Image 1 (tube, rainbow, N blue to C red):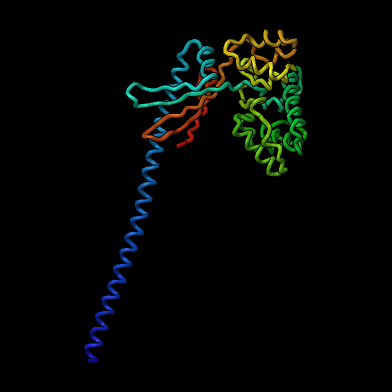
Image 2 (cartoon, one colour):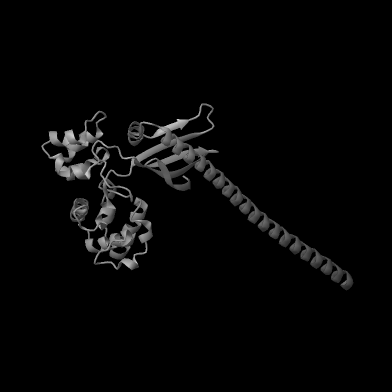
Length: 307
C-alpha cells in the first residue's frame, strides 16, 4: 500500500508539474501572440500613415501646380475663400476637400515689433491700437507680460528684451497662429488669466512673415468696424453679401474716410498670400494637411495625420 501510494503521489506530482509547464508555456505563447499582434497592428498603422503621407505629398504637388498654372488667381481664391471645394473622381477612387483663407486679412502681429520710423509708424501704430483695444475690452490681467512674450518671439529690439536672448530670432517672427497660440499658452500658465480664451485674435490679427498690407476685402467685420468706426452690424451685412462692392465704396458710403487707412490696405491689388487646408480620404480613413501659397510658390507643408 505504501509503495502504491508513493507511486501514485509521484505520478500525480509529475502530472501536476507537467500541467504547470503546459500552462506556463501557453501563458508565454499567449503573451507573445498578444505582443506580436500588437506589433503587427502598429506596423500596419505605420504603413497606413506612410501611405497617407505619400498621398498627401502627391496632392500637395498637384494642387500647387494647378494654382501656379491658373491665370486669374483672384477669381480662383475668391471662390476658395468663400466655400469648401469638394473634389471627387468619377470612379470614386479619390475624394478631397480644399479650403483656403487669406493670410493677410488682419493686422500683422509682427508689426508690433517694428522699429519706429517714418516707414513703419503707421503699421506699428495700428498694431498697438488694436492690441490695446482688445486688452482693455477683455480686461487682461497683465498686458505688459503678454507683450514681453510677443516681443521675445518676434525678436523685437525692445527695452524689455535683450535681443541676443531671443530664442526664435531665426524664425523671422511669428509665422503661424499655432506659434502665437504657444505664446498665449505660456502667458496663461504664468499669469492664470481666465480672459485669455475669450479673445478672438484671428478676427483682428494675421500671422505671417510676409504680410505688409491688410487684405481689407476679406477682413472680418470686427476689424473693419474698428478701423473705420462703423457699426458692426452694418459691416457684418456688407461682409456676408455675395455681391458686395469694394471696401472703399462701402466705407465712404457709410460716413467714414477710407483715405485715412488707405496706405495700410491692399486696395484693388490682389494679395497672392493664402493658407490652404486639404482633407482627403484613403482606405476609409480621413487625413489632413495644410500649406501656404505665397507669390506663386507652395510652401510650409504640414501633415496632421488621421482625423
